[in-house]
Image 1 (spheres, rainbow, N blue to C red):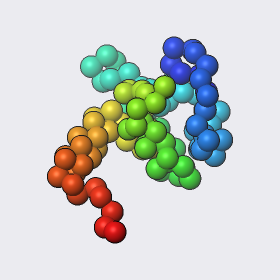
Image 2: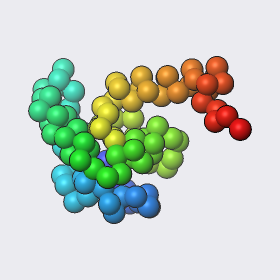
Image 3: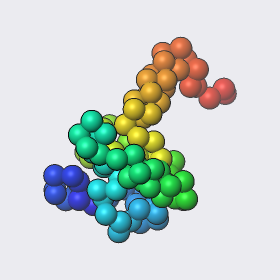
Image 4: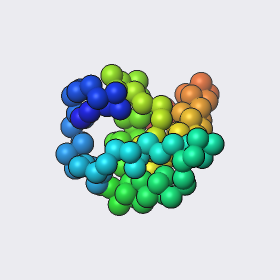
Length: 103
């Protein structure tokens, strides 16, 4: 896997099954609208994620600290803002003890 800076890093185990494997990574890192980016690219990325068998693993990867932690782009079908909201909700649930599995 090549990160956005062109550095090689180990790929997650699930990556070989990802629907985006081999696709142009720019689809998943569209420029924001205020910088001339277009929503169709983000929509295209999300449509790829919608049919991906490992979208959940990808989303978890993006929300978990890791060597390739990437705050930008579409991961697991969610864009940057949606992932920030998801991360915030998870932190709140943890703080309230709502994410624990009953014994």
